Length: 109
Length: 116
Image 1 (cartoon, rainbow over the protein chains, first blue to last red):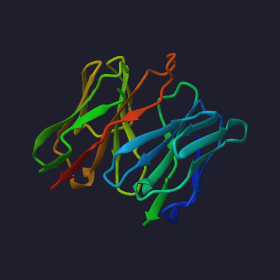
Image 2: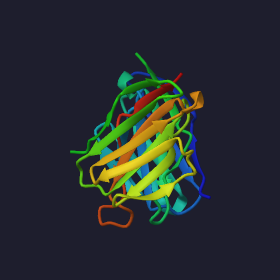
Image 3: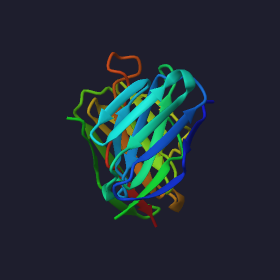
Image 4: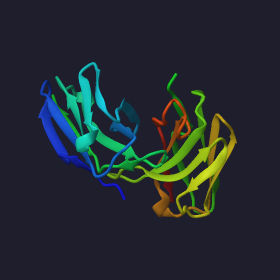
């Protein structure tokens, strides 16, 4: 089955720093989502981005479907950005999201 | 409105209890999901309902019983659970696979379940 790998597994930054999180996947996908899970467990949709580039405030994402990777950029980090960032993909018309293991981000004040 | 609501937020139950988790969405989505998430792991799919019919059951033990009474509501009935069932239970919804709207999944805040 399709494999999803996220890197780095852990990232510790000072407030104000920029970061890039990566998601590699092993097959063609029709769905790719980035989520932020905050310390209280809430999974927040960041981007639905099977291809192309999107921006939302300090966050942006790019998916290069032909090369099977996606990048999540966080600029001017804030302590509220702390948590786990998950990438999840699905193939064709499949309901099943295949999840990466996540990147745990800690932003220090 | 992109909100999925879940109740209760926290639940502590004994191994002989019967309880239910509830999920509601008003986004017009016709696919709804239950996930289980253990600490430091990604969510694991349990069930998928599409147009109020059970579409996927990921070999979940029968002590978990899902129900979809209408297109906006999803329940998970719990009975005779084990301590290892303690986890965060997440509900999600999306347009059904293949619909024009795609199938971006939206998640509720979860119910944190502790089985004693």
